Length: 176
Length: 376
Image 1 (cartoon, rainbow over the protein chains, first blue to last red):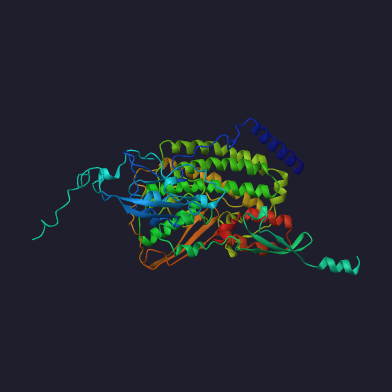
Image 2 (spheres, helix red, strand yellow):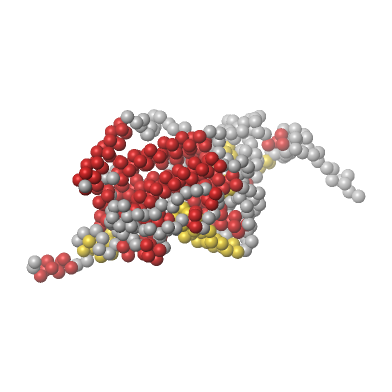
């Protein structure tokens, strides 16, 4: 009985392994063939641009506040038209845990996660990405989105003429 | 035998297994007090992977701690996400939309199958069969691909959020899951013919390191390890949560097919049977997936009222519990994880008396502990 079980167990197993010869291989030769991850994949973080080519980031610090490991830091500055931007913007990818909370917190869709997973450097300091390393040339996931068309100060149009805005009130005329 | 040799034979030999040992499943150390091949006792030394995750909870807001729960147990991140979210929802009194509940069940059951793939593969590998591990890893990769398309990551999902889930399913994703389930069921039969009936595996696991039902309950074993000892207990059925009461499934228990109830082989078969039940649950959940929101109205700043809650879920390794204390501030006052791997390791010293060293490897593999979950 035991002998029969041993023979059957061995032969059945051999049958399975023989069948596997005719199966498509599950592996890919990695550096030559690269796997394309799902669009939702969370890897290298980028800073995107609006449809007119300007930086989307308004240095509101919401991403750095949402970051659970404090790997985002920036310095806010203001342009001549009153528009805020990041004087410098830094993400330390050796700390980043790729949770995606920064991209979810961003009100202007500036900071986005990309499926570029090849983030290895010989020197850990090279993993500290500055603004010029982070900036990309297009709008990423939503190329048509323009924060200043919806709201904000007079960058895309005169103040108060955005699609979701009312004209600014003259505070002096409201005085009794 | 000369008097000196007799003296030598009585001496206790202390042997270190680990911390870096392929059969200890992570950085885990066992101090073996042996007499030749027979062990007098094996003492697990834990703490090598302690990252202070419970203390970290006190320094982060409720929403910002969710990515950390991914790291508590990298093989069942979805359950860790879920238990944290459920505990905070209970503190807040939030009602989760039904679509989100179903999506949680789908994601969790996929995660359970992926976890059991690793568990079964490493049991087989630790007792000397390498092929099943590779085959099961291949199946797990397919689940990783599905979960990657759903959550955006392959291991640290960060999918179940407070009040619902992070993403809705894409067009065609459900069809992919159905196709995968159709593919998986024959693979489970194939796994049985590959290794389940194999004489070596049966002899290495059958009748080895038997845990009787009273021991299993007494040492606080949970999940597949408890059910393998013949105790019919599953939180999904006995302490219903989420939408599990609406779905029909069976709870497999150990029957002692190749030896005694509660041996290593039973812990193998219970896991295989659980994978089949997960497939069944997934089919039902995909069928019934209702339309609607995936995220409840969660306040921007989560400040639960002062109070405490203990929330368990049936994870892939059994009861995964979280005791959460809120003092009304945006950060938790105390979070305590009750992990199934820690309970599983505590029984090792008791069971190891008189066991062979090679059988200890089978015992550890069949208990399926994960070192990061033990130490947190």
